[in-house]
Image (cartoon, rainbow, N blue to C red; front, side, top):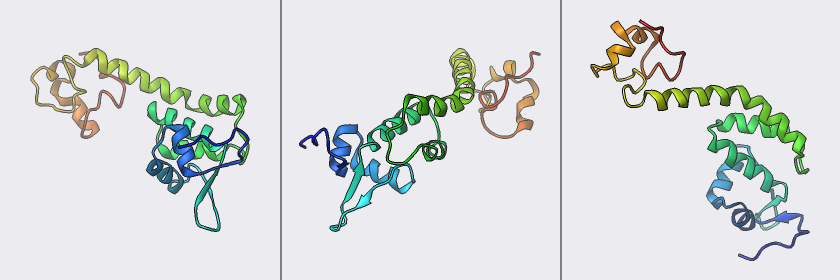
Length: 156
């Protein structure tokens, strides 16, 4: 696909897909979820403002670090329409997620460190789990792998 001129104000869905590296179907999905927007031509074809490229990049990076789509949509709603976000805009958005990412990093480090001996005390059938979860204390907190969702169990 031919690149749009550098001064083009609107891009076709194919141009956005080619430039962003995101499939057309993903762009349609993002639009359906309210993450990006387009206008329709008289012929009912989508046209995107150039700032959508930055928004798509933000969506992809945010998804890669595990931010839920609803949170991404809420963050993007805070950005001004039809203006390329500034570094200050991105700093404000990313700072809101810093605490959540720190918790996620801690959980991943705990998973990495415990991976050989335990899968988060969700199986409750491995004999080794009795070392990390004696008398199935974590079972009272509900089903599933509890050690990765909450603080580690107290030492025995």
